[in-house]
Image (cartoon, rainbow, N blue to C red; front, side, top):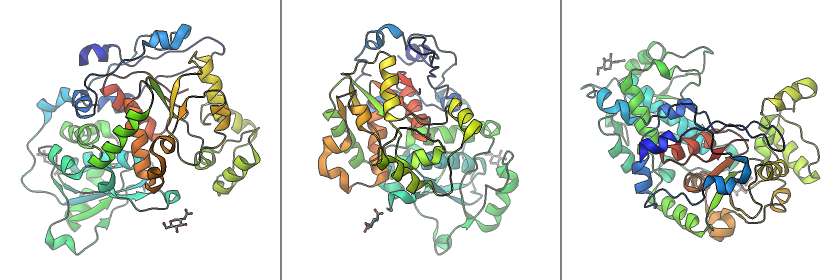
Length: 409
Ligand SMILES: *[C@@H]1O[C@H](CO)[C@@H](O)[C@H](O)[C@H]1NC(C)=O
Ligand SMILES: *[C@@H]1O[C@H](CO)[C@@H](O)[C@H](O)[C@H]1NC(C)=O
């Protein structure tokens, strides 16, 4: 099954009709390299066999949106595992805590990177610190989202994981090692190993500029196993997620419509035609991130840096022949702006709050994001209006299960 599905993989297409908007079905090459085989995921989640409810052609009508052959090779990370999984060193070089910031999927990405780094340094990893985004006004940790025991068990042989550091270190906070100083490729052995050996217990936030491609295989394998196999939602979140999934009429498309005030402010894009309410909400979030103007603004927009408005999203989905009666799960934050300009066109729209009721209000931002992630990796199709951290993670997990109907207009 895997081979065949991976053959259908990774389509890269453009659609001529109506406008010559170029659509990319996630090239995601990096993530893909690390992908682990999806069988265990679909077995673990509630799906007896991967669902393929729509015939994509039928669903997409004339635009043949899903039918163009893939351009890149997809290989689950299992292909190197047996060959390159080295015995763990007998002595640890020390203990590393990964400190993660931002949204759920950004934290997850950084944690996965951190596992690779810790293995590279022959260190032991302790549970990460999850520092939820300030705008969520909350404290919810790693263990509120991910199943800790499952993680530890799945990482056996890949890297040593501890829930807490050994007694002699337990009284201290880890020494923070700054990985962000340099702009160029970040070398952990040169920059971090000496501090690790000196202090024995350090915390890091992985640098974006690292060169993962230069890692030895055993470090890549640890990263891969952590990110795509060992991180499962807690039982309680999975139960909520599967209830939510069951409540959505099928087949359905999951739409990550990213038009909350923080996103718009972050993008530094200017939009015309928004309601006074939206403008105010966006301005309140902008801080010193002023919108671009003039030529810079035009270039920025042409480079696809501006998240689609709900109105533009409805327009594009229609242009792609996605019928307006399609069931759509709205994977969006609470503050979605201009929602009506989407729901006045696409009427069968479902959100967490509609399906789970008041229970959703009690949930943290991170756990709500986890539900959107859960539903999105199991949906019949996935569309995101911005190519952010969640979108990369969802697309990678879906590809691992053979679900390739993903677009990022
Ligand atoms: C880690 O251990 C491996 C052997 O398992 C060794 O080849 C490598 O040099 C060690 N790296 C560091 C940074 O200690
Ligand atoms: C943040 O949370 C606290 C306690 O839960 C609450 O009293 C406060 O109103 C919240 N602030 C915002 C901006 O939501």
